[in-house]
Length: 379
Image 1 (cartoon, rainbow, N blue to C red):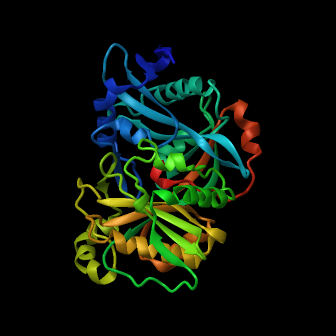
Image 2 (cartoon, rainbow, N blue to C red):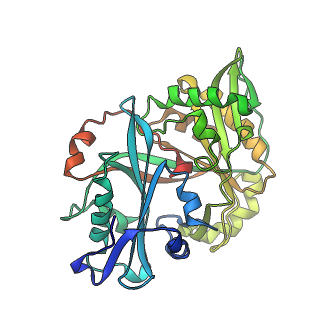
Image 3 (cartoon, rainbow, N blue to C red):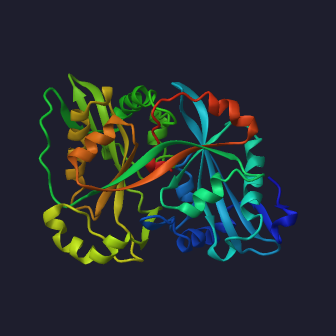
């Protein structure tokens, strides 16, 4: 995509970001937290693009900048990967990391100009629509993005995505699951893990199609090792898997604000946390030390296998410096209810949207009502 200036932009230009923009991109993420009941800055230190590489096999970051200057006004990322749509493999795009610098918010045409630049990438093919999420409580973003203003794509609401933070406070008893053996995976298990993910993710919309090569790829699964997987075996056959993925070396979450009640009672929550199981809440401005539970699958969505694997992984995560582990399921996913019943958690919710321009309308209309599954760790 060539550098371009939109006439009504007040001298803002758009282009594809590269390594020379790294410092500016990281600043935008640090200084512009995602608003909501929990205000969090999702930062990427020490290199913005290390975090982008795990999102898909094709990634682009559109940047807005002052014409003739290196100062960045905003960014938006598009990643494309192979995913399950209506039970078939297809190319799917995800739109995320949308940030506009606080000093540039309200600037006329900035948002529409950015989407014009994104649409140029879209015309290169690969995917007829994008998936994105907006955190509930971020009213300004919801109004701006879903308003239907001329020049903006259409945002079609889908399910609610529920993100859970499980407090890593104390060891738990692994529930009995007759006939199931839990163990740590090794490199020889990656093909079976990938098969398990494919056969289970296929019944969900938008879930990634994982291969053994993907799982072993140092860029696509940066920092994730075979031994980070807990697997469930029944009669020697792999019937479930779950990974604990530490991304702290290239992605971090920094607290910028809590809901009013938590802000007021944060010291008390931390005091009684060891007794209640609630997670430690760091002061505003501090990093939340956490890992992701990812690549979660259990044949038939068996809640007993799921909770047994998760409890084993939970216990293994204790003492590793994390305050909590995070995971996400769509509201209608039966695995969500099993996890919420079994673990103390803090929850925040986002709305999933399908984003398209007119040429993508038919593809969006053809998406059936299967429950979505987005891999939180790669968003």
